[in-house]
Length: 287
Picture 1 (cartoon, helix red, strand yellow):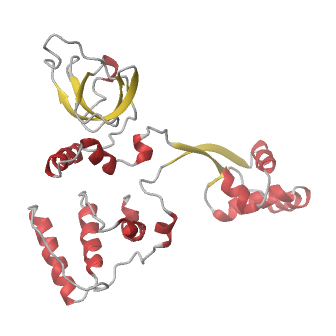
Picture 2 (cartoon, one colour):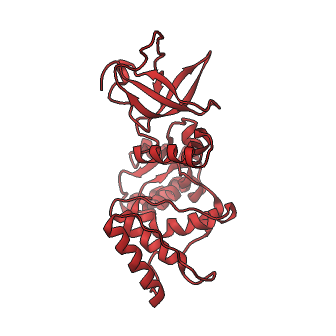
Picture 3 (tube, helix red, strand yellow):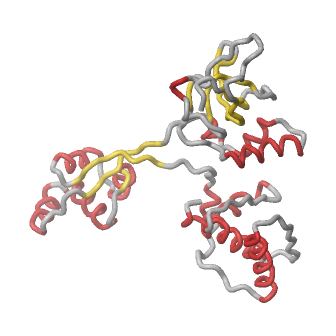
């Protein structure tokens, strides 16, 4: 990237046009299409998404471009393909680009919040049977913590372990000092969509057998995907006839092969149910 390169940025500030900013030397090679950046705006600053990178001629015309202030996060919030989709949606649906981007990027990401961090406890040393008996007698709370973490079989968040064992924080600190527990920091991924109702909507991870009509529909969709060509499909059936089962099976194959899918929900009240179902079937693929 040329040191005089600039970026066209779509802002989350109500300005419905792209603004151009110079990419400073310290961000050269780090800012790309889909990056979220913070830029100066009037007497303040604003966050936005880079939608285009321009060459050295950017800004020619007798005016000086302001520089991008910072890269909000190292990972792009949108892929270049999604940026193209956002620009197409803006023109096709005659709406503002900010409206489109807000529908694509979760609010917690747009706000630029850092990853959530929590304290995690690891079982550093197993106690002998004699040590367990002594600990149980002299420090019941510490023993309860030790037993709970040992039975869990893997590290646990400190707060969760304390709640599970019904023990105080001082008991955990004592076990850390003894070298029985080790504390470390864990970065917790923020979910793109979080709703308690979605967690309640579970379906079996294993796919159900398809009937003849479902199998025919799935085969036709799979053939179209394999050809890598656009082809529209319409599944007609009453509620409960298994259309979603075909969709999810096709989506799983696409995602497993490195592709992506967009699932449109007909009404917002169905969102928790849909998210729960998709996580049940596609969650182990990292989606």
